[in-house]
Length: 311
Ligand code: ACO
Image (cartoon, rainbow, N blue to C red; front, side, top):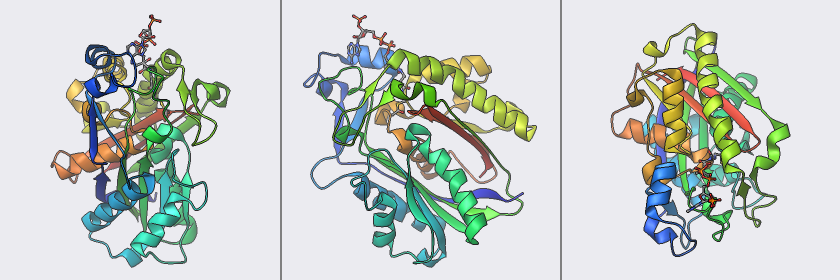
């Protein structure tokens, strides 16, 4: 079975940090409400000269450097995003230009909201198998601040901007499993019509969806691979709400430390959240070679996806 192995990772954050107190400038809210309902303490928002493209390029450069590969070795680029700077060209094409990558490779954006990065990981694997490449650059990048209604307290306090990127190698004996799903009938529960139009969200319905979907995705991956949660070193799930992660931990009956958390510092960065976490864990030495990790995402669509791999 041809699986993927993580070779390198990187992340990028905008310069502006807004703590919860700063959000009271926009809407009637409080640090107490945001912290107790979500666990979020601050988020990053793009300022002048920063956007999804600049974040994606910075994260991609760091991931490529971390992988030790030459740029000519990259055989596919996918950017998962719902907040690209342009409809055309894709953010992936702008990354391709900035990194001066090869011409004859598939390069495109993928939209599956907060599950987008994991959809992109498996799509990259399929692209490498179809086109004969060995290495893929997969990025999750979002400027959520650009699609938020800063007068809607139900959404504007929850999101942040960031990018995370990873370089994967296709290897014949790499341990790898993937699951995904979609509930198109629940499409209107989160989203917005265009980049220029703000997003809305039915928070409680998405919450209910999330607390059943994360454990179900983890269980499905374990069933598929015959592994137990004891054999998994880390579960890195989409960073939307501390209470969602706590509920998943309870349902799965695992030690809370197995679930990586950084949403207190970055809020919900949609497609960037899982690769941002992975890159941060790798940088800090928490995620090391030989560990088995489950990555799990859920979000607008509604969509979900999970990957299990050995690092
Ligand atoms: N500050 C103060 N009060 C607020 C705020 C705020 N920022 N936002 C809402 N409230 C109020 C509401 O108006 C409501 O008041 P009311 O009782 O007088 O009507 C009260 O707080 C409670 O609101 P709830 O919606 O019941 O709050 P809840 O505990 O459900 O938390 C939240 C809301 C944080 C949105 C939660 O439901 C959640 O995290 N949902 C999941 C979101 C998610 O995971 N999204 C991921 C997908 S996003 C994507 O794909 C792009």
